[in-house]
Image 1 (cartoon, rainbow, N blue to C red):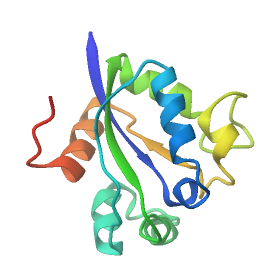
Image 2: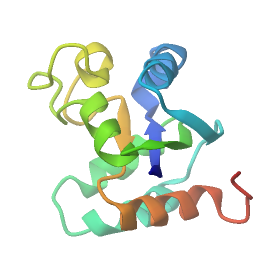
Image 3: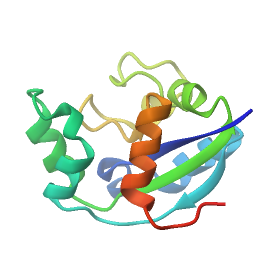
Image 4: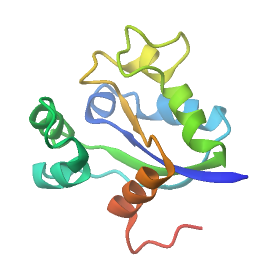
Length: 138
């Protein structure tokens, strides 16, 4: 059954010119890109998006990083989308990511790890709504 998930190509990957290559990896893995946009977000918007991590020690660094340059939020669709995207992305730490994953190929550190992907259906729904509220996604 088809499922939707949410992803962001993060500022480090955009700045390094990896956007097209990451999108190609996503499409090659069978994902349909339902919606995508290029945008920049404020620190306050990043804090709202990552509110679940507000008490974590990396919260300030994360929100500063995510508001440091353009990002590409997107809605993706395919069977088993959430789990399949997480496999395609690889481990958060690119040094521990499997060969062939997006983070192994394009990430530079745990903090600058090229891509975000939802971890569950409820977070995917929140994240899609956060960036694509009011937009009809067909």
